[in-house]
Image 1 (cartoon, rainbow, N blue to C red):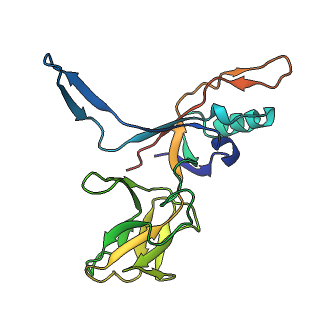
Image 2 (image 1 turned 180 degrees about the vertical axis):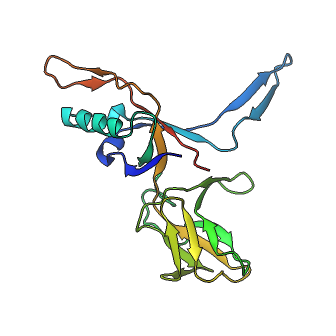
Length: 209
């Protein structure tokens, strides 16, 4: 998949609107009861970044970013200010934030994930785009400052030596959402002061795996 490891401007994304979307089929029966079925196993996020544009320079930067991505062709990184850490936004990233696996003495590579909600209904989200320099790893509650590496383009954590059997592996990290523009048209309206505005700039989360 064509993807640029470049992040959409943070100061504009901070004013964006959007969040997770799910696809659920609901059939209402004659009795008034419902039958519901989840079409998607995981949610997919949508955003509108037009709300973050405050100045003419912001508009120019978004247009330049759009052109460099060739519209919908290339994906890119996006910071969702409502959900960009392994823990709560108000807390410092901790190596104990998320359990990403249990050692078996053989496996050396584990995927970064974030779990929403508690068992038995918790939903696991794959994290493909961790932010460089933010990942922390612990084995059995003890932080590991070396002996591992993380691929910031895939979210895979690789240990030099496989963790021992039954050892709980936890991680903390900041992450971006892989997205693309959801329109090939940048519909700009110029006012009399040439400040300009855009009614909507939709972004859509990409499923990379």
